[in-house]
Length: 150
Image (cartoon, rainbow, N blue to C red):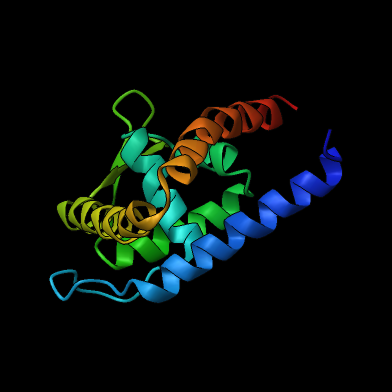
């Protein structure tokens, strides 16, 4: 049985290395205008994509960031034309976040580019390695759920 701490460390190092590799290898397509987004900005856009109309405090909770940090990200992304801040109809003090069409297109194209890049690498692996990756995904999702509960 592998040591859980060593396995956890190796999983995190491998995941970080894969993310860095993908980030370095994939450049935004010319069809996507605007500056390169940082990790936290992309994470916020993904949260808003998954939960349109989410508030700043709720997004901060999902991202496990301070509300003022998320508020700063919201301002940056709104200034770039990627997020819309709408006043909540029931509570005029609350703000609801939505993606702009530009942001939705940008996220979609970025996701496709990453999937094609990583998919091309997966396709070159042996069938056994492809199956091992497929079998590992449910366990990784279970680990994420366990960590979120803790």
